[in-house]
Image (cartoon, rainbow, N blue to C red; front, side):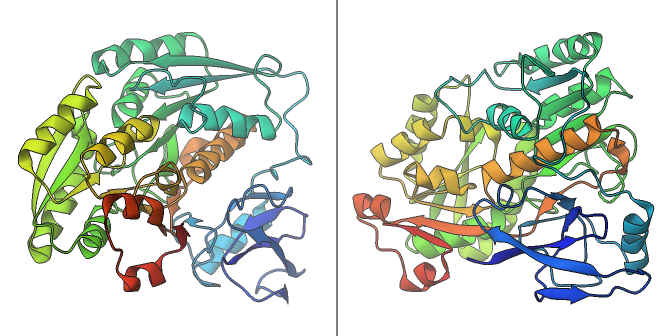
Length: 404
């Protein structure tokens, strides 16, 4: 595991940077040095330091961010301008509390049904939990208005308008249809999104570095998806597979980019893909359709739907004896075979950090879209053994985590 380093700025706040030597460094244009401070190891990097604020891109100064996220690149002058101009957000943690006496209102808009209380890994559960650690306590200084479409996407516009009518300070929207509905409902209320899509191509923001308007957020994967890499890893794990099933949610529109990337990668891997939708939450029917195709492996698309329903998907994959690859390490910890991606809990914490910054007065249009830069390959050998599958040693050597 790598140490995660932050830059301790002259005002005492910590800006996440890249992998840099310990010690002090004078940056051109600054009268005082920035002191480098080790803030712990992964996972999780966000609870090991109580004074850091947010990621600052240091591409012109240091190596890429080892914490796993980066805002879009800027030059040295722009970076120094941020420091000199005091534009870094107020530090997160015990030393920086919300404004006394103010009650904040957060609207939550999701395409799926409300998660059961037993599911502590849903994005709509993790974000309020992260906000609590930042000083926002539901029922005290935070009101959360939750709206779940239950898969009925036609309900989203009305729900978004309801959140606007209630005077939400910020709307947290999960998945592309919810984000589009929120944006259509208001051009002024800040929207923080969480998803896996191209926000520029979908007309949500002008560019990633400076979104403009009222939308910002956190992407699951950078500049597209991890579909091609995940398909390659799955084929390496199951080299005899010539047909691979791709499980996608009913919200097919937000999956187009993932499917296209997987289809583009398939010929070189000598596999054919069979795309199967989960309609109406009927996983049994979807897996029955997959069984007819007789694939050699399963590619589970990256979507909050499947994080919520991960245990059912993992159960059915095991029942049908299908080696499957997922997006998030947490899915493998729950019994999935393998995953390649960033931590689900970490990415949702980043969304909470942006909500916090906006509550404190930051303009969403000035907050760069955050993208992960560090991805972990996680393999569950217990699941492999159950499937009678031998994981290639070359793959195990490259894995960031092996569950035995």
